[in-house]
Amino acid sequence: MIDTAFDLVIRHARIATASDTFSADIGITGGRIVQLGTNLGAGKKKIDAAGRTVTPGGVDAHCHLDQPMAPPVRMADDFNTGTRAAACGGTTTVISFAAQEKGQSLRAAVDDYHRRADGRAHIDYSFHLIVSDPTAQVLTEELPALIAEGYTSFKIYMTYDDLKLDDGQILDVLDVARQHGAMAMIHAENADCIEWLTRRLEAGGRTAPRFHAHARPMLVEREATHRAIALAELVDVPILIVHVSGREAIEQIRWARSHGLQVFAETCPQYLFLTAEDLGIDDSYQGARCICSPPPRDKANQEIIWNGLNDGLFTLFSSDHAPFNYDGSEGKKPGGSEVEFRHIPNGLAGIETRMALLYSEGVLGGRITLQKFVELTATNPAKAYGLHPRKGTIAIGSDADLVIWDERDLVLRNTQLHHAVDHTPYEGMALKAWPGLTLSRGEVVWDGQEFHGRAGSGQFLSRGAPSLMPRQPGGRA
Ligand code: URP
Ligand code: ZN
Ligand code: ZN
Image (tube, rainbow, N blue to C red; front, side, top):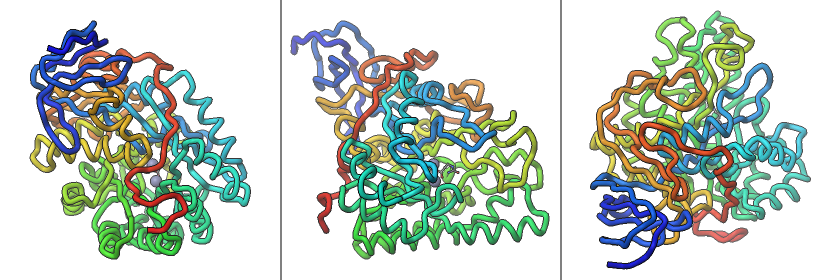
């Protein structure tokens, strides 16, 4: 017996990492894992996992919390409610977005976003940047300085009028990513095609929520994905295509990989569990709940996404939690009334359900291995965004961010969730598992019944260089 007084010992854990499953006790001191082994000595506290599976706490590397919106629209979740929901769903680190408004300095956007998070988060958090106005000052001073300070990733939009960059601007920003070793995330949809299609739909009176999917067919995602890949090839920099929805974008990414290009890809629960029919099969407004971009596709594309999760096409599985209420005047009915689809805020809630959906349907449904689950939900996101090995794994020296899984049948109900959104797109779904315990740096934040977090206990994480990328800053392959 090793005689060490741990703060906490988790006994009889079936530990799953991205590479192995093994049985051991976990010794935790000072919020970190300090020992793994059988028959560890006593701890001041003890939890018996009783043979249940223990995975690293989830790293949700794509979620939107309290992101400033044009009034009257407002996100339903701030850092308090959003990180509470994350913890109850088995996520222990979130990376959300400090979004630059056009005309605003990037630094001001980051400062404002820190004020929104300070003292509110229950779990650890970090920020990606959103670059919407790449002025000379941003490109030569602000962005390099922020990357050096640990904001080592940023998102570029090819759509949305208030955020989109043209190709020349994208090249400029990608060049900064190359020189400074940052990860560039790209929202790939062709803005002009969407606008053209939207106007035609509107001219024909087709403005109900379901027509959102008609305005954003896979072609617009395919073209933008292809263009993003070409721009990245020109600059010679890795990129990560976020929220990939189906076959056509996947084909572009496979083509890029087959040509030796470093193109990473992320997908989200909505592309596995929803289809365009969830936006409505008639002109009723209910489908506004499921409006997101790119939109969910069809059953055949869901299968293609499952294949991509299995065969390594996808590096990350994130929620893209973008929380808007259905009722009231700040969310899906801006100003309190039903509006044309172009005015409905894009995005859906998923921060609390991401892990259980993939564990239930993926691991327990026999579609992916437990190792793949850990890789997609924790290890790879931590690596992609410079948090590994502190986050995303179960290893000596890593933060004690852990989930003990309860494998049991349950039916998903929004009333049981902890976000501040008035609905879940997955209402009524049958699941086979839910986190029975979530630990954030060794503290129980969710015990399967109740939330035990404390606002302000989540720490801001300054991040290192992405470790999925073999290149050095400024270097070529
Ligand atoms: O519809 C979506 N995905 N909304 C969130 C913002 C984004 O583009 O990720
Ligand atoms: Zn996006
Ligand atoms: Zn998003």
